[in-house]
Image (cartoon, rainbow, N blue to C red; front, top):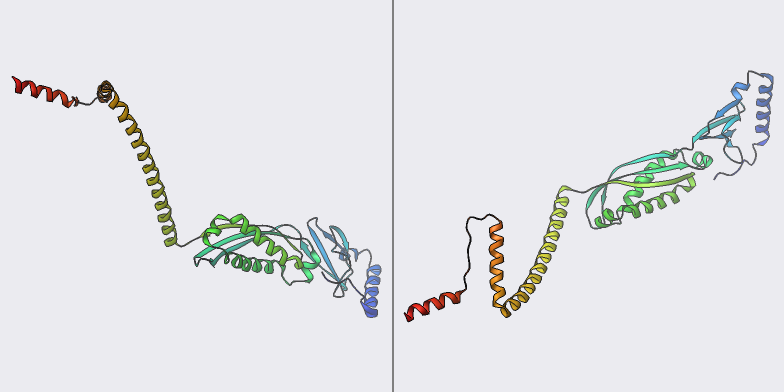
Length: 267
């Protein structure tokens, strides 16, 4: 923050006095050149003989300006939207990506914004680009895709600290889009598909194992009750008939054929 006015010297006071006398002599016409209107969302930084007037910026409302000795600069205090164009970034794991974002900031000290930097908006825009590249360059692609909010807060803290002396308050930083090469997209899709197939095979194998256990238990029960096996045959026939099949296979116990063969040999 600039130092308050320490004094404009004897010559300065003489010039200010002359300017004030000219205003008095030319009243009421000079009043139109002396009174300025500052809007609610603006502040006026007044320079008198090249020095910023002490205290703080003027406004809002009516302010008094002395002709010839005073000049002023209007500063807009509304929130500014800064769109960061796509930046070529090499991630920590050597993947080239294009990332763009948006920064929301406002001026909270009009005097610092005028006195400490020549073009506060251009400086903030360039700093936002550099900070985005520097911060994202320390992250891997997986961190970049999964931790957008955390990375955005980190960029906001860095920008807010760097622009404090310019009278800037960074309100929010958002990462809009992350573009990766087409070949990398195909590789990631193939990797995800392979992972899905592996999980499907594990689930299928688990189902087969459970089914084999159930079949083993069923075979033990059927072995203890031969009549239960016949009932199972009849249930299978009922299921086939319900599906309107033209061919029905009727299973017969093999021991029946053995008995018939024995009778034929005996006869």
